Every structure is written in structure tokens, then in C-alpha cells.
Amino acid sequence: MALLSLGVFAQHDHSKHQMNGAHGNEMAPEFENENLGQAYVKYIALKDALVASDAGEAEAKAAELVAALSKIENADDAIKSATNVMKAGSLEAQRKAFSELSTHMADLVKKADISAGAVYVEFCPMANGGEGAHWLANEKQINNPYFGDKMLRCGKVKETIK
Image (cartoon, rainbow, N blue to C red; front, side):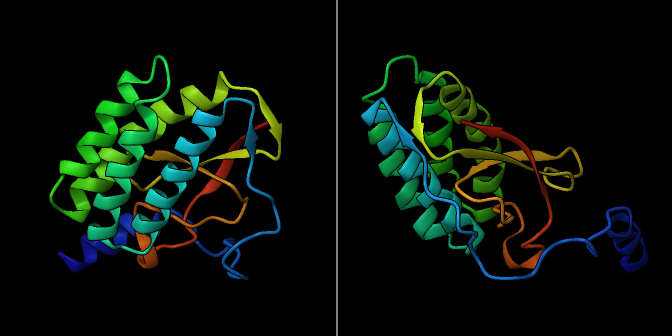
């Protein structure tokens, strides 16, 4: 079984991942829609809790995100996904639900007017059992919410939203 696991991980090259400081110098984005800006901040706090592999903190941050999203029109899918993260019960289930949430948050962000900064859409090809998963970030530096410190830098920036 150990050899099979090594074979799965050998398919993705981690040698090119940067290992410098935890955050880049990029600034957090500012949104014209203040409610979306507040929801985005809550989403980033949730992402950071998953990066830290802290299920309790992730649950709390997901609850805050649900409250923030409730102030935004057409955010029902994101609210449902954030609720799923909140109720997931385990770190693994939270991370799976976070993948769906990230898709819905990306949809909201792409439709928004960003007045300053940028949002980075990042991708890990190994998340979700090798299907891959996206997330949003303030910085280009990869901090993977799907594996935490096991594979913190696994991933790459796929898109920049300005």
C-alpha cells in the first residue's frame, strides 16, 4: 500500500514550488460592493483555517461567512456551500465542501468590480482524490487549503481577477 501511495504522489512534481515566506507582498483586494468585500474577507479567514488544518476554526469561520453571504444578492449557492463546510464535522469533509464553495465564490468575485488589488484563482491538481480543486487567495504564494502543511505549496496560480 505504501508503494501505491508513493506512486500517486510521484506523478506531481513538487520540486518547483517556492518555499519562501508565508505571504507575498500583494495587497488584499478592495471591492466596490462592500458586502462582497466582507464576505471575501470571511472566505479568506476560512481558507486560512483550512491551511492551518484547524477544523474548529474552519467551522467558526464558515458560520461567519454564511452570515456575510446572506447580505449579498444571488449568493444562495455560496451560502449552501458555506453551510456545508460549517456542518461537515471533519477536516476532510470541510475541505471537500470548501472546493464547491470556492467555485461559487469565484463566480461571485468574477462578476464583481474590484477597485484595487487582485484575487488569485489557485489550483491544486491533487486535491479531491486527484480531480483537482481551486481556491481564491490574496497572494500568488501558494498556501494549499486542501492539504495544509502536508503539501502546503502544492498548486499554482491559474487566473488573476482584477
